[in-house]
Length: 296
Image (cartoon, rainbow, N blue to C red; front, side, top):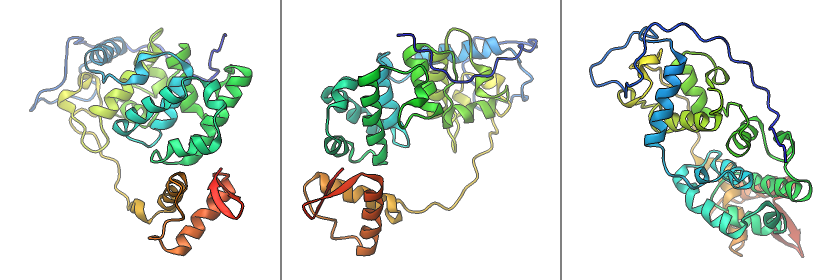
């Protein structure tokens, strides 16, 4: 199959001249100061330093051991707004139970929803199931964005990691790293022929070192090329609703109760349960069967 993951990617501009480079640099030490972009403008050196760091420091995650597009799609859908530590055991269970798109496509929606409990956003489970049905019937499309529930980021990630597409997979971490580095948007940082490794490396850096609120510039392998080294601006603080006060939390409780064969949660105000059930019915996540609610 000749899937090329048709995703637009801006051509990379000509590289800027090198003022100096320190490819052996492994990060700032406490007390170091760095002039913004004054040490080096060498994109090659930056790319090499980050890729070497990733080769040494990357976490051993199960979806990084495969190029199977189905397994990678499952991991990407599960990782949307769910922490890696929570995803790993659930991912392994899922792949053991439904190892291919065809096997998942043959599963019932109710079983898929029950297996998804605790991962949040249950509509993602149904979209993944629908995508598996398409792949089982028609194979992997040239444009991965035509699959149910697959947006630009997920298409780029699967295209890059599974099919070797030379595209930037831009999640929150990758965008933050590019913004702080100050060498252009993520697509312009992409090295030739190593898109998959680069995408993983940038996301790993953003998840473990160049974090949103407590970046560890002293441990950063590319600090000497970073416009924000030592003084990255934290994201603005905003009022955040407690998860337990959200409709999403109630929806999750209702789905979990139905998956366990229980009635509607008795410890939640009835008006909140009614609003959640109405939304779940509208989204096709639950249905009425003989006068009782059941998973869709």
